[in-house]
Image 1 (spheres, rainbow, N blue to C red):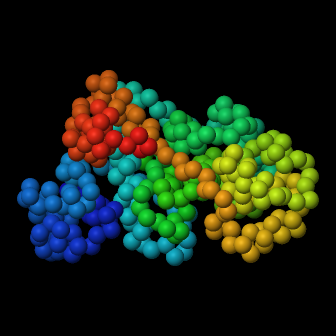
Image 2: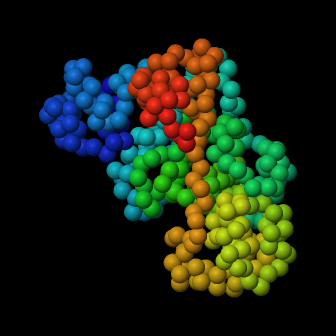
Image 3: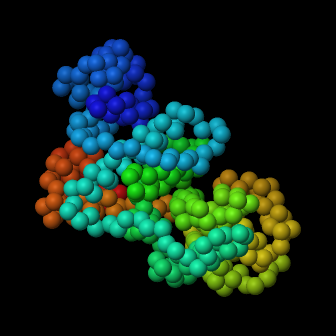
Length: 355
């Protein structure tokens, strides 16, 4: 168990055995022995390795082991294996802490995710996905207005959202997995908010639409349609853009992006999907964006990134209800006890109100 955790932490930190050995003051061969459970480090070496890897000593001795199942990356073909390993290690560590926290509660105050039944059970054409998205919004009581935080919505319905800080640049497009029966969606903290939101809604589409699509339909395209419909529902699109348009203004698209958190490009897709603009106009607008190099980075201020605070809130709630101890709370948050004390008292340099 120790060796596996050491290897995972080293992968998450992006360090080779040699690089870790230099910081720990031992040979690379000794690091290899640690990872193969052929030897155990002294307390001094353990402290140095913990500091180098950015984990607490307790991380190496967690009693329960969890496994990520059904991992599916939305990745570019150029994504390095080393990066994927770092992401997986980071996700597994965060998911493990989530599950450990839930197991400490007699009745964990987050419901299990359940797949709903809809008026349409088999989807034969993409347009039917609009119905599914609208019905889900209705069941979840979201109405047709902009969703302030998609992360909050998903977490309130039993889907763990993990925001990884691994520097993915442009080579990672999201990930979906599960721990036990709990679905997990992974996004990057480095992305703009509209990209995060679309990925979250796209991965939600995979969970909702699984087993419902006709074999002739492309699942990725279907989930893109679901994402657009979930974030910017048809009634709101038609109210904002009208029934039929000859053109869409860039400033108009930007304002709608800042309202609904859907990218300007994705809004163009929505308008075309709903036949508000024809396919010729859609291609013209895409060409216009390409000429100005706006497809990779849209003009104007980026939509604010989403954050998650539910895990931290539940840690403090558990502490307040004497479900977990102060040292366990610090361990779950990956903090030293001193830093945790400062955070708990809302004083000192360790307090971050934006986390």
